[in-house]
Length: 327
Image 1 (cartoon, helix red, strand yellow):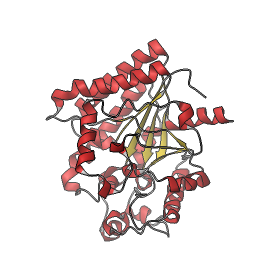
Image 2 (cartoon, helix red, strand yellow):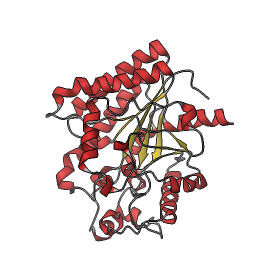
Image 3 (cartoon, one colour):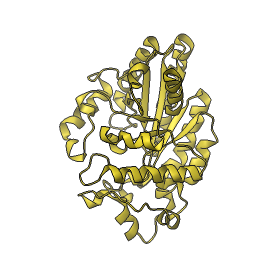
Image 4 (cartoon, helix red, strand yellow):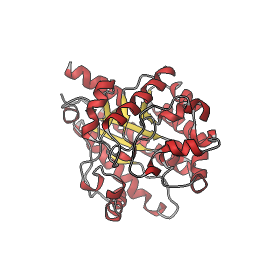
């Protein structure tokens, strides 16, 4: 099946401190994390104003109101990473308390659900790393089951998944099918975006990814629907990470925007999918500049919508479209 129009897809990795805990202290990143409370409603406002449908891939821990509630719901089978610091469970055990501002966000999830076109997906229960040594398929399956269960208690049915650190693992897709997860966000095809454990993310690959933000070295990374739905769960790969505003690199922002617009043009004209993603905490500082840049992207989306019929669909809606095609 081919699309009759281009699709603009947005997914966000909603994780707060759980996605950074093994890399930075709260003190090092507190302003970004604190700023999520202001940035997230602004993103929802911009999405609503432009009729943008987005998937908020959420770490399961964020559904809880506090550490007491979280501790009562920890799975029996935990990830056994060789590097113990990768697991959040020792961190939880040792913490006297977990400050809500950095670790929990049930009120923000409720706010997201109040806005039309917004889907809550999963970013796993514990920000689970599928390519790190020591952990297993059984441990991953239990983690995803816990994520689905807490979401279900809040009235959310999980259909879409984003793998933390983009560590998607083909051997684990069977667990998604078993648990009813219908689709996931895979990686761009270029070698610079290949899924790997943390050791594999070397300086060379990081440097090429930075260059690719401004200059087209990996291609448009847009996708025909038929190529995304060969088998279940469906893979709707990333097209572009929305790198946050930087004072030092602001002079290159016209190139950053052009890079995104050109890929969107390719999707709209050739009836393909363009999949943009970022983290809410990326907008936690320089919020006005990041929102303005997002609005520039969405202005271009509206141009493509008017002239080429481009539509905005979240990952779950793409699943429904794909399911209908396969049915």
